[in-house]
Amino acid sequence: MSNPRIVSLAASNTEVLFALGAGHRLVGVSKYCDHPAEALAKPRVGSFIDADYEAIKRADPDLVVTESHLQRDIVARLIDLNLHVLALNPVTLSGVLDSILLLGKVVGCEGQAEALVAQMRARIEAVWKQARSLSCKPRVYFEEWGSPMIPAGGWEAECLEVAGATNVFPFPAHLHSRDRVVSSEDVIQANPDIILISWPGSCGRIRPQKIKQRPGWKTIEAVRNDRVFVIDDRLIVRPGPRIVEGLELLSEFVRRFVTERVGGN
Image (tube, rainbow, N blue to C red; front, side, top):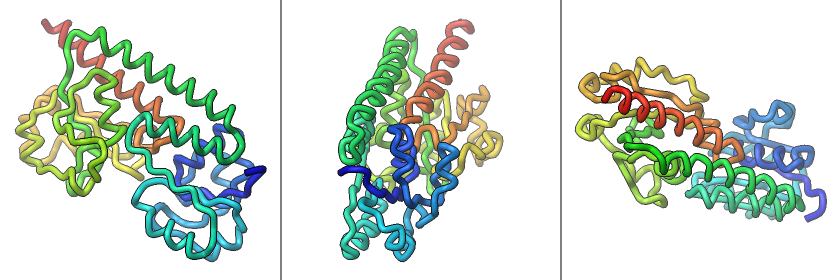
């Protein structure tokens, strides 16, 4: 596809396109597309689970790019409107990288996509190598949503393994969020060493203190030792180029725990 006019309905795909040098081809984005700064100047044509179909038609795109099974209804409607749609749905770290390669190929930026993915692979590998040298593995509860309580799945949960942590709720990677609900009592019984919070759309605004005040949680190891941390969802929930930044931050929390544990012994 040569110099396509593109509408992106997911912040992750918008970030990928800008990283590939194709941001200028965007003629419409979702309201959550806030990175890089240039994305803020693009016309808004919907949110993540809703789309302004009239605005999309006015943008006259050659291609509409979506992300996640949560946008399946939007995809169906766009197809009914005779628009070309690329629906990406990565659920693993390798899937995220493969999606970047596919998007790059579709929009004529294959070389740029290969270079970007090579850089991301190198950073993921560096974290993995560091993790192999750790003397212990902290037990981690990684929360993707708070009401109901949903442990992280897919690539987010995989990041725990790469960073050298043990996931206290190791659900299968392809399990949808609705099938990963746990109770507050489940978390208390799991007694994680570290609690990580990253809710979609929160942009890192959650306060650890509020999490620590949940009924009964004062007995949890992570709460007692002040190891409740928030990761900006834009760095790890979005399956885009910055996912390696989220992984590296997660790795810092894990390595800090190990250092403290070894020092305490």
